Length: 209
Length: 209
Image (tube, rainbow over all chains, first blue to last red; front, side, top):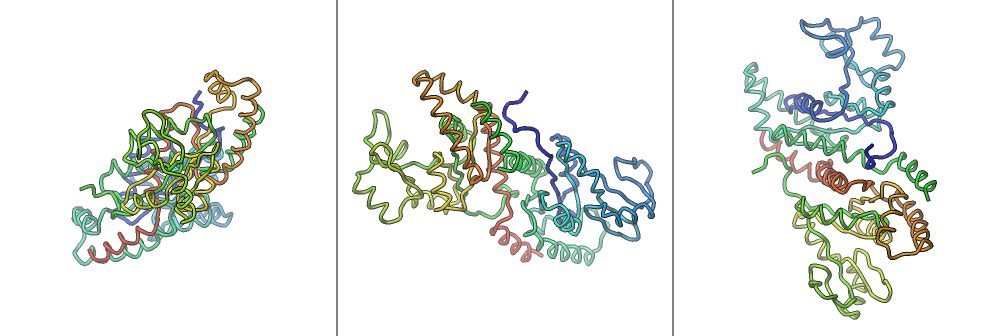
């Protein structure tokens, strides 16, 4: 038994967010390899693509089921993108947290702001590209967009970055390993925060004396 | 150049505190070996002991000089212990922070509470023993105290632990390496906090676009 940890407490929800192209997806993928943490899986009305696995990539549901879940306040956040619904089912995340599991959730900025409202105890991490020049390089590297598209995208990014003050942490994704290490440090530090469960430990001390 | 760090900003002050016997001294010593951080050196009116070095162990000063410094609001905290004064000189710490150097300050709980008032931007870390039984072992191991002394000490410790809600973080010192790693994670995480200096970076982004 590890004597350096507190009495078993609830897990923490880490929301990894940021503009498109900043690398939040890659960071979350590497994080899952390095750290004992669950990835939150979204529910969607979109049809599965070849190779996509139910419960791993998404929970694939009917529009009726999705709208019912909205009605029952069953989402931490949801959105309709090009006619398909996507949402984070509240009960699944809350259950993992209650069991003491940490959960990481990768999401765009609009979604993160919804979660801030529905689950303010979450820890919100904003992933930034090291520079706009580097972000331009990354987008250009994909080769699928025109100069005008790219300028539009960078303009959108700047608007999104203005929401950074709604976040707790900001990690600059210069190199992926360093960025992941920073997220890991944030997780470790957040588990060392003085919070309610520390009083359980103090009660335990009193009994021991 | 490391592209993953923010524009040069001020250093952070980490106050490592906790009851006697919890191991804050050992943690700070190891931390200095692992991390690029300055140790705050106290000023005292006590006479130097053999081997103690001016400016490393303490700044040794006259009582007149110490009282003058109090009068000029020159301490982050100070105390009189058995007739000798001890204090943390404000100007030296602030200068290091302004130069962008992190500073760690090891101090008892009364001192930490004074610093919380004089420098609220500090980050306050409470070091806890893994259990009262283990703390009893550690104190008994030193062999210099009677059973009554030890019970008195443990009672004092319990009273001190009640101040934990004035702290930001709590690190349980079960094994020294894990405790130091946690403090390192706290330092890394605190440097990733969304704070004023992030707006400089956003301004930089705007210029780049």
